[in-house]
View 1: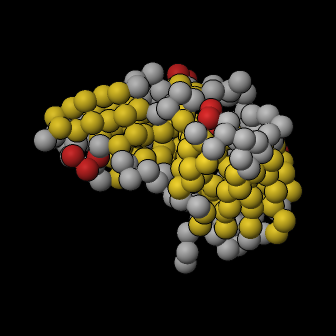
View 2: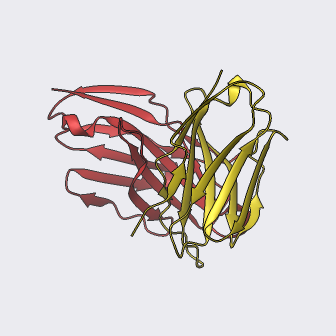
Length: 116
Length: 115
């Protein structure tokens, strides 16, 4: 199976620390998409980012940044100056392009706890 | 615009009973997905539909599970008979698929407890 691995099951940091969530994926697709979703304690799944496999530029959005490295099949997520509101489970996901691979497969998630 | 709407939000039932979960996707979205979330297995894709047609049901655990999408605005996931190991949060999600993968919008989930 072309799976997504989030090796960190749980991370605890103190507010204002930077934290990086790791994501490694497997794929046989030439074209694919990578995603990060956030699941706060309230339970809903919130979309954070989508990245096309052709675009290896890193992206920054406020305190969030993403590092995509095709050579290592990794799509890591960094939160700078973490805040208590960042506490959530974060899921990395991948999706192939077209046909039966056109479905979003999630990693097992990383629980991030930001302590005040 | 209303998001993906799921019902019921919570369901408690006894083993052996039939359970039906419902989903109304976002209007205009042509793909619909059912996921199940448990502590042990995380988020698992059960089945997905494109233009009301089931494309991949390889994630459906066993014959006790079935899903239908009779029209573009409604889908059901049925478990018959239910078992305690079916206890989970079931998410429905939808998106627009027009040759390029789009953002998947999730409902708030249906929390199922089978006693």
